[in-house]
Structures are given as C-alpha cells and as structure tokens.
Length: 232
Image (tube, rainbow, N blue to C red; front, top):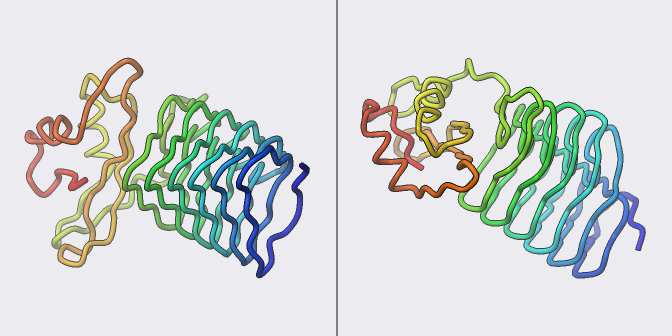
C-alpha cells in the first residue's frame, strides 16, 4: 500500500503488510504493531513527522526512510513517540538523527531496536530539545559520519543536571565512561526524580562483539564521586 497523508483526530493503525510513504501528525494517534513502513523521503522526518498527537510502535519495522535535513525516519517536535518494540533501521538523515530527531515533545523507549541508521551527527538519536525517557531497548551499530554520537547525540553538552543540589556536567561523566574498554559511545541525560529533582542516566552503546550489563557499568563507576555516578 501507499501511505502519505495527515493524521487528524482519528487513529491510524499499521498491523501488517508494507506501507510506502510518510505520515504527518499534528494530533490524533498512530499505532504500529506489525508490518513495514518504508520508502518515505522528505526534508525532515522521512517516514514520520510529528508536531502533536501520540505515536506508539510496539512491533513491525520503520526502514529505508530518508531526510535531506533532520530525522531520517522520525522527526519529533511535539507530541509523544513511544518505542515499545519493533525495529527502526537502515534510515538516513543528511544532517542530524539518522533514526530519530527530537526537537520537542517526548521520546520514550521501553523496548525495540534502533540500529544501522546513519547521519552526520547522532546516527541513532539526535536530541536538540524535549524530554527523553529510555528504560530499555537497544541502540547500536548506528553511524555518525563526523564520529560524534554514533548512537545518541545531545546538542549542548555545556548544560548541566541538578541532582540533590549538586551540578553535574554530562560531558564529564561521558568522558569517564568512554574509557571503559567495552563502551563505543555514551550520552548522559537528566531524568526527573521526586526526591533529587533530576538523576543522571547514561545511554550506552556497547562495542560490537562485546557484552556488558548494568552491574558492569556500575562497578566501573565506583571511581567516580558518588553524586556523579549515573543512577541508571
């Protein structure tokens, strides 16, 4: 099928088959539980461009989309995008965010696989603004042609995280974690916390052929002052 249009107040569902084209959202709901969304091309958001509404991917695949600027597969400037499963792979952005460009809104990952995407910066996910909540899932084997943020790129590392009254500079924690022999790339972000205000959270890409779990990373971080250690 060919998909190209705007999601209004209705719900668009992809449950199987192959859909060629792209989706523009200002409101409404997009749900993908199976099938393939592919072949979209645009300046921003090759297959999905969001300014509002809610998109939830729990299965299927978004692949071979292309943006001549930002967001090879998905460009998010408003609304909520939930990656709960499925695959986002083999997408290309000329500038930033091979898979996902976040310029506003909320991007949440609680599963799924983001891999083999390519951009100048942030081969996987490029974060310019908005809220990021990564609980689980895999972000790996993405390529940034500049070498900056193969997996995740956060624009503006000069900002800091305030946790328990202490200022944490993400770039300092990232530089420390990159010394781990199994870590290919890392981005540190602040997530809201009821007690501390914010907590440092590390989004880590493991080198191909290596394995590391959360306990391995926590053990490595024992050389950091306690308040600088990522909570997740």
